[in-house]
Amino acid sequence: MDALYDDPAQVAFYDWDNPWPEDFDWFLTLVDGAGSVLDLGYGTGVFSVALAARGARVVGVDRAGAMLAIARAREGGNRVSWVEGAAQGLDLERRFQAVVMTGHAFQTLLTPQDRAACLATIARQLAPGGRFFFDSRNPAAREWEQWTPAATREVRAHPDFGLVERWNAAEATDGAGVIEYQTQYRLQDGRHWQARSRIAFPAFDELEGAIAAAGLRVDRWYGDASGGPLRQGCPDFIPFGGLA
Image 1 (cartoon, one colour):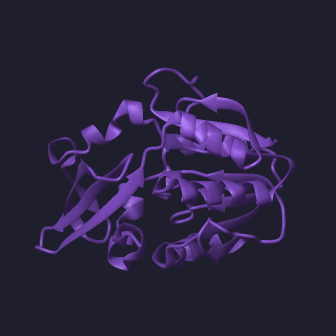
Image 2 (image 1 turned 90 degrees about the vertical axis):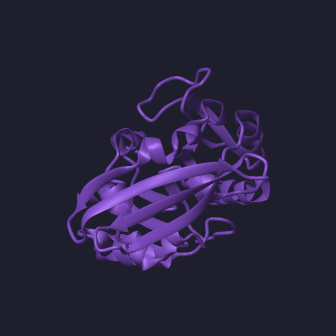
Image 3 (image 1 turned 90 degrees about the horizontal axis):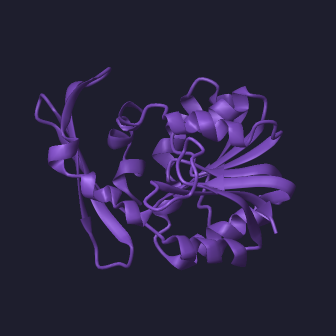
């Protein structure tokens, strides 16, 4: 388990470091009207709670126990059914009108086998006529090349810790399409936390084939989280569709 998601000391920085993104405004429109939603890889539960606030019956699934604690304590968190577990092999024995995976959580699935297992879960849990989507960064955009200390280092005020210096550093690994990056937080009193994370950047052709193999169809591919088209060098691959 990645310390960035499972170490309570580092999870305390997560919402501060990752405030509500503009992506979520658009993602909400993709599931507008869905009465039941399964949110895979919910993190600290921000999106799950927003879905519940719009009237959906929401189940959130994530394997990170430290994030689950924050999600449950969040205002409105009592309106979501939280499950601690992995997306791979999940079977809740019910179907949902929408199954979603935001925040590039899909990229924490490092192997084709894990990605296939997650897509099989989406197909198993999705109701006929239901919708699914997830987001995965386009490897051709090479976003990780911007995750350097020089480009990401900043000092900002944290409500509990005061001034915090934070930065990232990324490097390629010997795993095909897998990038390892460091996230570091340093306080003025000298306390310092560091996490190493690994995420995958699957190519479009692999995603397209894996989605079809899982029994899913894509009605539309988006190239960014504002609804932009799929194009060369687009930042994201976002498939939106349902059961084949």
